[in-house]
Image 1 (cartoon, rainbow, N blue to C red):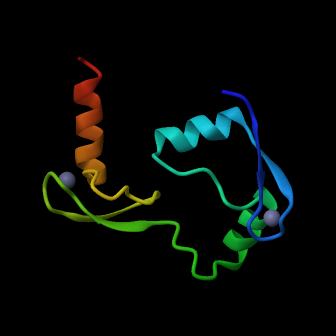
Image 2: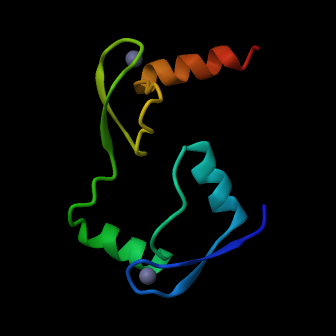
Length: 93
Ligand SMILES: [Zn+2]
Ligand SMILES: [Zn+2]
């Protein structure tokens, strides 16, 4: 995967979306970033309406939990415990 150059929606500067970040976001089912790292850290620092966690209801056990990524619509979401146990199970497959 090549590095991508994306325009920041906030300051309009072009920033680099590197391969490592692309992989991380892909693994977490995240879309590509909208803001440059500078604006992102600014946003995180102020903490203004920046929910770093999203409320979910576990598809497996029905427990309420929060996850550090935006769950995709139509995709089942698991709480931390179910996610971990499903991961450790699939590792044997
Ligand atoms: Zn920016
Ligand atoms: Zn669960």
